[in-house]
Length: 559
Image (cartoon, rainbow, N blue to C red; front, top):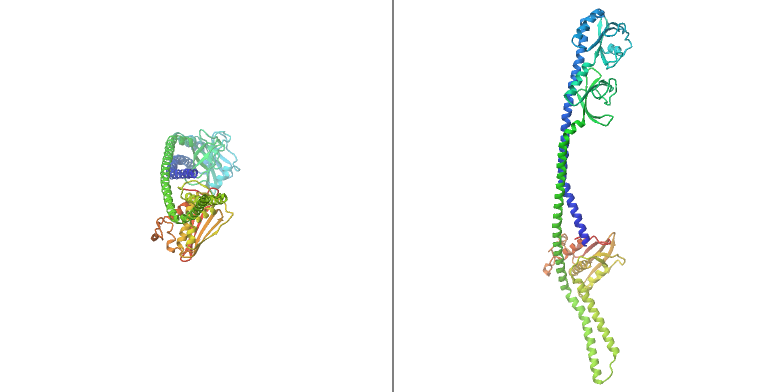
């Protein structure tokens, strides 16, 4: 029992600790998680805002540059006729004028609708070149304006083409110019100077057009996969071939197949936050540790208080059970006195006969008959043993309540309870019928306490019978329980009382001196062994109390 109690309180302490710890730590964990999440989102939002600003700023600069070059070439086509531009000297003057504004233009040529370069100004002799099958020529004839990807070509330096189609006398011609990429590089380098980022331009296939200072070469494929062209700037997370993580902003350049890409290593953003995150983690772990200690203190204190309270309650219950038992012994006194009186009378008769026999033999001088003496002594011994058995049973029942458990045969325990009440039952014209299951297994529990339950139940059954009646005791095994049914043919219990009969101090026999504690104590005892008591009753038809006890090896013992 003590081992079971110890296990019970240890389990209670563990459950209480776990409950207090989880309930306390849950809000802290939620707050920490939400704070971390909010902080990370705020930092990411700030990073995205910076990357979007840089990316869109560079995109606008590139768009402005391309628009400027496109409009300059378009103005030339609008101001001058095909014949004028076809004259090389005129084209040279125009080219020189463009060069005064900057060295972005590498060459300038006029191509007729058949793809033949009719006029050319530049570092190479490309007059008369046939561009009919070139991609840029076909695209320009279809689109009207064409901007090529950056390529090295024969010159082996990066450049790209802008070609514009212009009408002339029902026909068309194309103004074509090769543009140096140095200006584009300079525009992209500005972004890398302003912030710790890498800025470059890709085409829709992910090929570098303008590489960064650290990544890629012209015409080399990037590890970045361009997003589908959309308005605005999109920020995502990417990884390179070495597993390094980056924030990546992509802004598509209008009227082209190019996208401005701005990369920022996550490591650069995480490092400044490490200190704050460490402080947050230290506070969080410190909070968990404090909660752990407080939970342990609270669960220990509460369990100790509960243990002390239970021990006090158990002591009071034991005292109450003992008092109820002594009251029951008082009721049994008459029956016990009658049981002891019979053997005492026989002993008295045998002793008187032996006295008379000895007196007669002394007076007459006749030798004593020792066989007669031996028979009388045996009879006296028999009656003494009978008295001893009666007093032993009474003392066994009245012994102080203990907590030990032992193997108990329920049928024998019922018989011992009946022994004390059998004389009174016969006197009241009440028959006690036994219907026992003979092969029932032993039950492990406190014999003294469960015998008191039986005695109290049988006594109540006798009190409910007025005149001739029957009390039937039935034992049986049902599933994993032992059931003891005590049925009487008495007056029964009113329906409105059935829900209250196990309440302390509730009694239907107050006028007969009842305390209202008998059934309450019985209920507590049975519950303490993990069992239950069910009552079935109808007025004038009798009452049945069904006691269920667990039939496992050592019972389901509790406090």
